[in-house]
Image 1 (cartoon, rainbow, N blue to C red):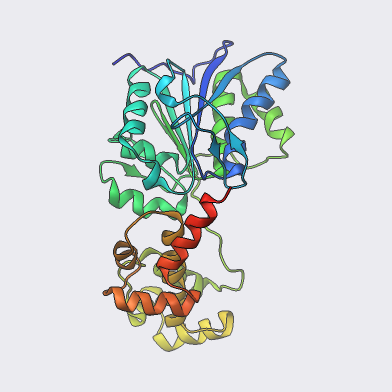
Image 2 (spheres, helix red, strand yellow):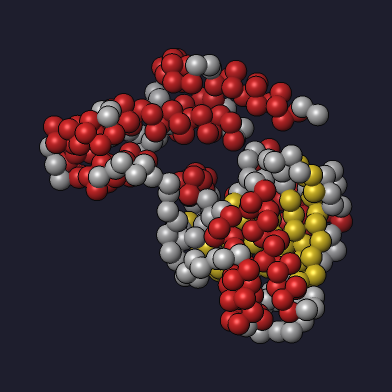
Length: 328
């Protein structure tokens, strides 16, 4: 294994960068990784980033928007200083032995590997985040921690640990790329790049990711909602949630009715079934595992609840997804 190259050391040299684009990644995450490099080159008037695209198999990668990104297969990539791994949906499908081997080969060459959106999951699957701190999109933080206990999973917007960079989505990816530009090419250029995007997000990587929330929440219902989100796989009794929030079950129920026009029980079930729908659409987990991950003790109870909430079975939803993905 070659010594890791410090890409964050101040330098005037161009950074050789490969951008691995996987099928079903978000267009915004793709742009968040690439456009800061383009803007830095433009503002500097010279090539600070020398990047090229690669795909998993050599076939064009199709983004969620339908845009196709062509590139040779990752297996043919000889070397780079930085490899950006941009992924979104279908992570289990992308996690193949061939991809793992290629990622390990690039890491062994001394390159820095950066995971964007779902990219950290693929790095972790290849064993490249073992013993490292890492983050990913907040929807996948708990799954990442459970699946890869050797990884120190953080809620940071982005995190840099040696030759590993990980971030939680499109906007944190911009923050991460600005951090790299600032370290390598100076604060003045990073500020100018940020200005092009009217981007004024603080550059603190340890700032926790913010999950989208219902503006109708009160502090009490928001606290209860957070506890529910953290325990989707093993739902707590409402009385236990009320106790942790320091109120009676009656007070909690009144707040949910006044602020959200529902009950705590119904809200909890909605959260579980929304997560079940996401897992059914965005992962290839067996439906029995989807049921367990969202707190259903039996497949039959899961199937009934899923159909009542989404007006079709999880299996039918997956078949419809497959037809859409395979459409010309």
